[in-house]
Image 1: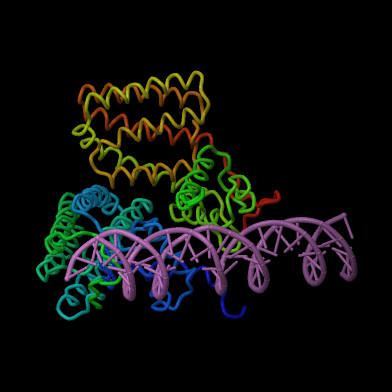
Image 2: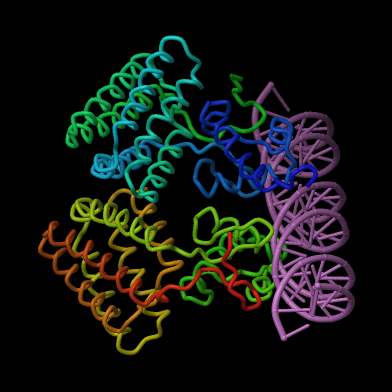
Length: 233
Length: 233
DNA sequence: TGCGACATAATTGGCGCCAATTATTACGCC
DNA sequence: GGCGTAATAATTGGCGCCAATTATGTCGCA
């Protein structure tokens, strides 16, 4: 019982940390993730870094090129649409379960999160916004009664966020998200499944269109390590 | 440049091979996958085995218990149902895309695969049956026009098959599958989306109910290496 | 004879080193 | 002066060793 052999947890946690960093756009799409940089940035051993990178590659958050390394996945327009459509399928399909599993206490908590998000829109960091937003959707899908569905939804969300915007691309998009959250709470209160499904679908489409609109016009995917456009956050 | 530049491929392939072995029930649910056994069974190095195991763990095909090892995931009834419901959502949602993307040539190939499956039911190994069945569904979902959806469907299929039956649990189930395949081809020919969706949903439910019916009545999940029934926690 | 504790054996898993591969730079030739 | 080529530098990735942990077997004690 000395210093915990929680080595295992650290490894898994590292993958999450790196994923988080990617979500926060510390590393941008197409950028190479150098193992040496990561090991000192996260104070981890090379082996742990590689494990984490492998895990993220399996989850498609990053892409692995043999003998070249790992880089943040760059999602082309077509794939972006495919993810969006699949998300709509899954997230709207969760609505009946949510309606069945929701209770007053959960609605109250969702409402509170929606309020906190509104607050964060005005005076909060992008990280806070992102976290509250995640918490809101997490909580909502958590009550759908189907853990596998929930997990699949989350996997897809993570994947689209890896390369798209985590942080909202425009202030308008942020306001739209905010408005949607409150509307969702209302639909839940009213027990209006159809409306909730509509809101969710709209929420997804709006977000990802915004994201696309703000993506760099074209350019290509591979940039080599040396001359990287490193705009440190 | 001597002989083995394809090291990278071998590693990824190994995960597939092990997954395949699990599908074929070479290793049964709850069984521990000893690294030493695997490295000689698949003629791989320990490192490659571990990588493959990690990958499968991320994909939830197997489960990782720190300092104990990896074992074939054991899916409880509740999770089984959750997977089933999610599969139905996704696979029926793929139908419109399939209808839009299908062409005569593909229908012909599907029909041929359905015939080959019928043949395999009579005189084929279970491996052949399983492969033809996979090919059939793969081909069908491949034309849905949404690669992400296709991939998600496949991930879920793999996951359920890891612990459920790959190989059909009863001859009756096999005959039902066979019949369904031909019916699906017919629905495709007729352009009847509703019917196809019904068939798919039914196909999934039937398969997984059969699987459950043939699972060991109750008993505990974990068998440790020796023989005992270690089920405390 | 049954149960608990210790010793032994087997297995997992962390980690670092160095070869293989690729990017970068320098040089010389056209 | 530009370009192809060779040397150099930087990075990735394969792999084995050994410590940590857990399972198994044995012995002593009640």
